[in-house]
Every structure is written in structure tokens, then in C-alpha cells.
Image 1: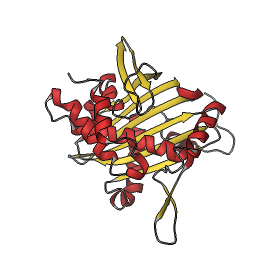
Image 2 (image 1 turned 90 degrees about the vertical axis):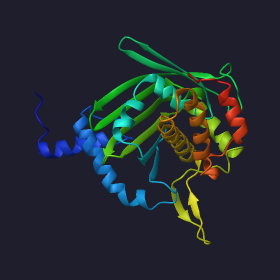
Image 3 (image 1 turned 90 degrees about the horizontal axis):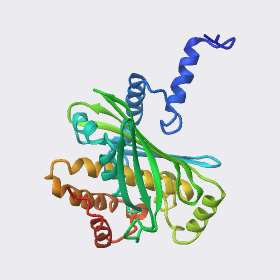
Amino acid sequence: MRALPRGRSPGLVRLLVVALVQWGAGIAHADDPATNAASLHARYESLRERLSDNPYGTPIHVESRQAADHLEGDLYGVIDHPFATVSPALKGTAHWCDILVLHLNVKDCRPSDQGSTSSLAVFVGGKHARTADAATRMDYAYRTVADAPDYLRIMLVADAGPFGTREYRIMLEAIPLGREQAFVHLGYSYAYGPIARFAVEVYLQTIGHAKVGFTVTGWRPDGRPIHVGGVRGVVERNAMRYYLAVVAHLGALSDVPHEQFDKRLRDWFAFTERYPRQLHELERDEYLSIKRGMDRRP
């Protein structure tokens, strides 16, 4: 066994390991369910006040970070479903396709389970597009990292995306809160190069110039909040869209199977309209028409 560097105690090393586990939207982590569950419980305690008193009208908290070529968004929320319901409903490629297709830019999702390998072919296109014909295919590897009675962790990883973006990560972890609720953390991140940077700059200078995220960076003289913009706004909006898709998916479970898809669509759109400045892109009828054309009902 390699010796510890001189002057560093085992306790310090353990602290560094925990810090690495928590760094980067929980995406760089040790696969130890007990450690990760404890970290998520600690995160809930640190956010408890902000979850109960925030401008969102529901117990959620949004964060984001930007590096030179990397973006990360995190959304933490309390969900009014018992962990015993949440855990099985969020495992498996078919369930994740049901979740991802609610996003207005996802035009199709095809799950695949072959032996020990599970993946999702996700087709991403413009918000008005009605088919996957002209969409970009993204291949996500799916893995259930942890599946314990009191902790769940799912990872979806795609090497490449549109406009030269790469290293996509969607991570979801959850723990029980009492008997009737769960605490969920959704992390969304990706890396980008010169082509993607240029495409985003054009978007932000044209049709996306007024778009903002959720983090409040300051206050105007009249008391109105100033929200983060730019690429951090982009990643926060998408993290929120995927989190709301998870909530809509869980909320439809009690419906009969052939009605669940339509309920997910209606609920997801209604949830996003609570934050029109950030998330409004399509009118309700157009969104429903596009998605119903996919016909994912059983």
C-alpha cells in the first residue's frame, strides 16, 4: 500500500475524499452508498432554510458553476412522494426515456438493454421540430450506481452532443425524508469547445438575449432581483426542465397506464409556466401537439 504523504493525517485524507465526492455536482464521486447518502443528508440540512423560504413557490434550490470549458447545474428539491415510490420509478432506461422526452428539445428517446449494457438514444432538435429526422443523436450510457433501501443514484453519460459539446452527465440521487417525502438532487453538466462557444454566443446575442437563469446575483433599485444570465443561465434552465420532468413523471404514476403520457405532458408544461421568464418557449397547444405526435402511450 502506498504510504501517505508526509505531514498528512488519515483524517485529513478522509476530509479530502469527502470534498471530492461532493465536488462537481456530485459527478466525481466514490461509489459508496453510505458515504453518498450521508453527504446528501448533510446537504439537505444545509439547505433546509432555503428550501422552505425561496422565490420558487416550492422547496427547490438551484446552483450553477462555469469553468473555462465546462458548465454544471444542480437542482435540489423535496418531492412529495415516498422514497419507496421514487426509487423504482426512476430506475431503468424506459423510465428515463419517459422523463427525457418531456423536454421541449428532445424529439425521441429509444431505450436499449442488452445484457449488462443499458443505454438511451436521445434525439435533440429545435423546439419547433416535430420529428427526429433532423435531430442530433446523443447516446447516453445508463447505470444504476447505487440502489439501497435509503439511497438511489443514477448516472447517464454521453460522450458527444450537438455543436461539438461533449462529456454530458445527468446524475440523479435521492434519499427518504420521513415516510412520505424524498430529497432529490439532479446534476446536469457538459463540456464545450470553440464551435459550441460561438453558437451559444450567437444565441445569447440574438433570440436568447433576454433569457436568464434562476440564481439571484443582485437587486435592482426597485427591489427586483437580478438573475444570472449567459451560459450559466442556459445550464440552470435545462437542469430545471429535467428536474420538473422527474416530478411530472412521478406525479403520473397513479394514473392508468394509457393516460400517463398525456398527464406527464400537461403537468410538465404547467410546471414550467410557473417560471415564464426563464422557461417559456412554446405555447401549450404547440408543445402538446408536438409531443403527442411522438405517441409514447402504452
